[in-house]
Amino acid sequence: MTSHLHTLALSGVLTLAAGAAMATQTITADAANDNTMYQFDPTQGETALSNGSGGWMFAGMTASNSRRRALVRFDIADLIPPGSTIVSATLTLHMSRTIAGFTPVTIHRVQASWGEGTSVAFGDQGAGAGAKTDDATWIDRFYESGLVWQNPGGDFDAAPSATTQVGDVGFYSWSSPQMVAEVQTWLSNPGTNFGWVVVGDETQTATAKRFDTHENAEPTFRPALVIEYNLPSTCDPDVNQDGVADQGDVDYLINVIAGGENPTGIDPDFNQDGVADQGDIDALVNVIAGGQCP
Image (tube, rainbow, N blue to C red; front, side, top):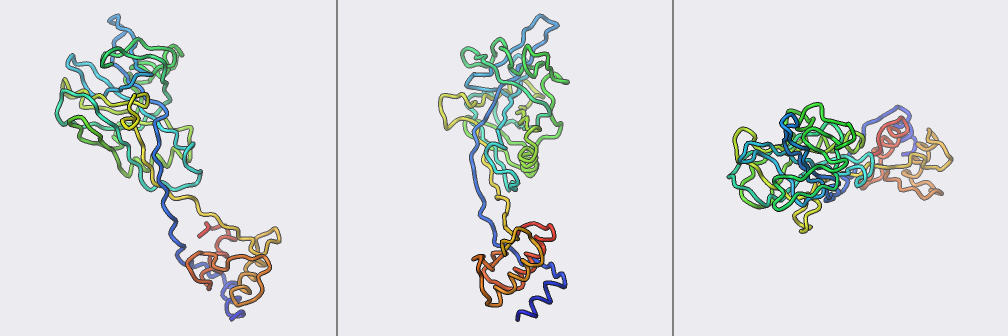
């Protein structure tokens, strides 16, 4: 058996047996930042509005034909180990006030950083409050910093990441393959994570929806991003523990599988498929050659 396995290993057989399926991990992330951009026109003497620390954010068109767009962001890279593979991503928001029936609400990937200051609007907060330092506004990414949106109302992808019909008060969720791709990108490149903008129906008046923010007094109403992911696979190809992964490790594994001594105490089932056989040798050869762990 030893010579047969050795011949197969040296011949460069790289066919991998399927590794044991890794258990999918699930986390529920709280929003790191959220805010509302209230449409205003400085040429008409109107002042910048925001609601950085308010308990609600808004999306859609008001009865007076003024746009509202909400911003929300989650710190993906602080919550998920690097190298993980995102399986699914679902954004859930609680909508707490509206005068409209079911209307489409889309989310879009934001293309630039933005801020959340200390502004808090009065009452139901739909009218906004005077913007404070670092607030996102219809024009400013960070109020009083000189950093502005290239396009008033925010810089974001034209194509929506996901769409949901939002009607009466309650919880609503957005999920799509595009969101999975975006969360994966934010995990791999945290510097590109500017979150999503929530856009309501802006084709007619009185469509605005009020959503609860991460400052809302009711914790269960706050924005949540449920992410399913698989941890990166890890393995040590230096099975003979001599400090280098090479042919000596292949020979060592072959010997152990054939019933030889195992002074380093390695698990000969290298690919974790439940049996120690040629598949484990193939997997080890592949990893030593620079392939991924099974």
